[in-house]
Amino acid sequence: MQEQLEIAGRSQADRGKRRNGDHQAHRELPEGRYALVVADGVGSAPCDHKASELACSMCIQTLSVDTELPIERVMQSAVLAADEALRHEPGACEGMMSTLVLAVWDLPQGRLWHCAVGDSRLYALRGEVLEQLNVEQRKAVVRRGKDGRPLRQSGAVVVAEGITQAIGAGVKELVVHGSDAKDIDAVLLCTDGYYSATPSPLHDMESIMKQIELDRAVGSLVDLLRDAQSDDLTMLIARRRTEIVSLNQVRQRIRSGGDLDHVAYRELAQAALHILPEFISAAEHEPARRLLDLLQQTGIDLGREALGAAVSLMMNEPERHHSGNYQRLVALMRKSRG
Image (tube, rainbow, N blue to C red; front, side, top):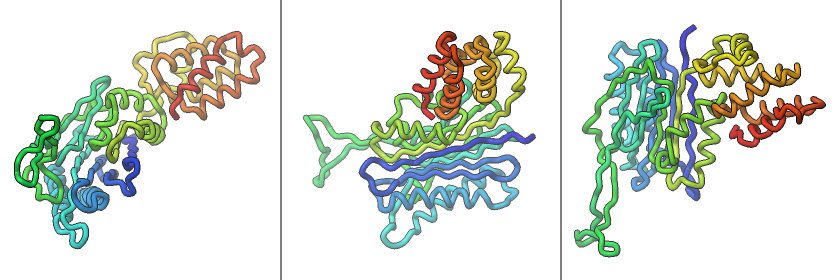
């Protein structure tokens, strides 16, 4: 069976803003490749919402064309096509610009190809290590008044950070990088609205990797960041889709108190969805306790719906309070994000 990716993204406008200047898109390509792109329209230029959407659509459109050219060349063509489209937009949107981060994950070849323009970011998660794969194209600029003199506030020169390159401004420097992706578990593409709002991208990714439904997990995280965001916020995550190695094997190891250290979190989560109701219905208190303790220790979130169903099952158990499992279940349900 060919390995696949599970992909989910969310884009949320800043509070009080009518249109979202960010955009994200993805597409499965032939031969086990996946294209992922995130763009952030420049707010000081016209039509930021249209700029980001057009940049993403041009990249996906170019990458979807069947060609024998090397993927690096195709990605360069995609970015330059987006730049050309924005630069020649007529009318009220003339002069619109956008940042862009583009990745192509080639699963069969175990490679991740990526490039970026502006300050949007690409991260790769390998086990417990989250690595930023690109460097933002930014620089500090001294703000000046109409007379050309530096602006000052409380005696200090006012300095602002700005991007040094943007889609729509004529891309002059573009390098497509290739990374070994055989040990990459997931990638995160995001705009500055996300990484400025979150206390820890690593913590976010670790939490998301432990949850079964990726789309729900990403949506819940973006909702949690709403109060902290001060800009449009976008994140796009792709993670390897794993299958349960052996449901029966996990069941037996939990019953016997065996070692589960080498079983992936999502495999445990998928197994727990099946096994927990079995243990409760059969009044197998000790295996149920082991499983609930494991969920607590690892932070695996089965979701409110599944945990609520397990609580309902346990309500029919006359001695539910004696094992402590009822209290464990209720505690997990209260902590659930999904």
